Image 1 (cartoon, rainbow, N blue to C red):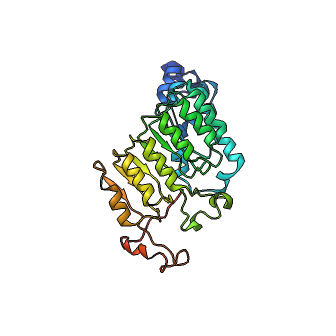
Image 2: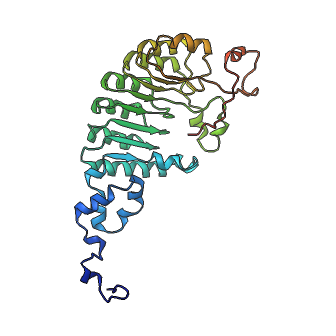
Image 3: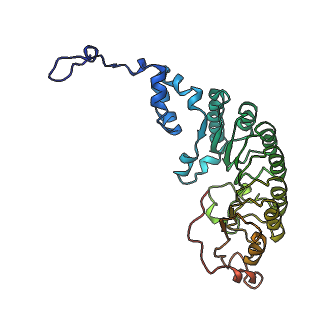
Amino acid sequence: MESKEGTGETDADSGLISDWAELTHECLLNILSRLTFEHRWTGPMFVCKPWLNACKDPSLNSVFDLETRFDSFFESTRWWTPEFERRIDAMLRSVISWSNGSLTEIFTRHCSDLSLNLVAQRCPNLQVLSIKSCPHATDASMAQIAYHCRNLKQLDISYCYEISHESLALIGRNCPNLKILKRNLMNWLDPSQHEGVVPPDYLNACPQDGDTEAAVIGKFMPQLVHLEIRFSKLSAKGLSSICEGCLKLEYLDLSGCANLTSRDILNATSNLKEVKEVKKPNFYIPRSVFHTERYGHWRLYDERFQTDVFRI
């Protein structure tokens, strides 16, 4: 045991605790609660058994948030491998077990039905579910979510191509408090930004039933205030279905919706009295993708280029 410089006094003499493992459980919880989810998983959990046990406390596991971690890196091909998916599933299943039913928010990517089915079984108080880019999240697990997580307020199933309009209908019917829906697709107009990272077969599996999904949203989700459907293939008919059924919309993101004109958007959104922002599909279409003679309606758009690079 070391003495304090110049005094000869040891930590034991001064009453200080030199063994961090001896901190009380309550003290540990107070300390760990000040850390982010990511920081707890990359450090304190591996210090010693008492610290690991504290990290498993239900009070620290009401939120599962890996999105900030994903968002801080460029998309990687490794994320699309079965091994990586198993790791994410294992992490989520662990937190579900530790939460003892208190898990209310999930923000992640690349999980599968394996963990989502457990979410449905063990997380009745779930309010936020964000599962972007999950190629093995399907209608089967979403049906279970719809039946068992009825307090859902926010859902993000962007880039989840195995989830169809059937899941949207079930969620709408069974989750009356849903306020936020994000159903964005990858940029199919210029897929080069995804090539080399996203598997080609998945990139080519972009859902084609934009109007069907729009009809379901308009019919079963009347409480929506925030809706994102970037690069959806819906037409003016589909947009009208949404605007007629979701009269409480305040934010509507239509970026990349190539089948809509400015006139379509203006006509459909004219009855949205609460709307504060509508993001229109203002972007440049390369000549290599479309022939201007065939798609002359692009002249109706604002003459602005989309300067931000769409990232998943």
